Length: 271
Picture 1 (tube, rainbow, N blue to C red):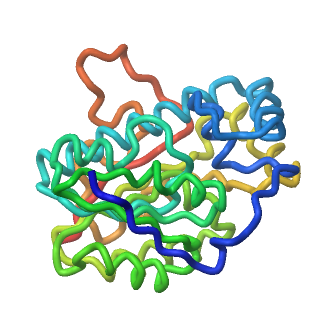
Picture 2: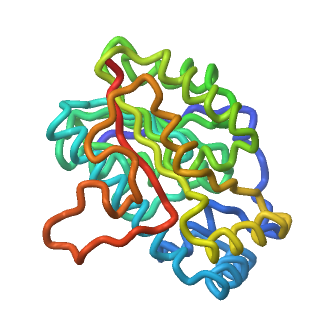
């Protein structure tokens, strides 16, 4: 197995603040991970007390990502992945799914959480044939992300850009759209965009819980309407069935009948 490459940035030396709940650690807690602190468990439990369905959303989001990557490897022939907003390692991380199907796949993870950085070596454990790297950067700095990722990825070749539950952390929707556009402009024809985010207008209880969380002092996460999530894919060719509640995106035949939840996403090809 190859050693990972870690690209350090200004945030690499930030201290982990264990007094304030952090969304990546809470998400890890909901997914059954151990990389969290009591403050994160308390915030996670407070959230689930109002909306227990958040655990289903977290796990459905991860399953959606796995199905996206499987499609990208097996049907689209993609071998390069830029995963922004990586979060803490749990099961079926992008490189694990991709390199299990195509050992030569190359993956760059991007996050700016110091706890994620501290786990980077475990997160980046790569196949011998492929490569992984970690970029310490914020989603709001796409130029830095692209420059650092280009050390591992060849942007003359089709690449899959993954933005899983990260654009909700960009407060202004126009800024979020601009970030997506800048990143996709740097990728060649035949590249893909995968996005999934919490959606507004589906489940009022979910919205109530999220609004309360955002007012708690934790890092806020903004739910977006289905139309807003769909607009991220403007100018691209959506893969069927388009932008849908994530359990409905190409569900596996042996799974129970999927149901609509407040998490929408899609996958699209750059013409």
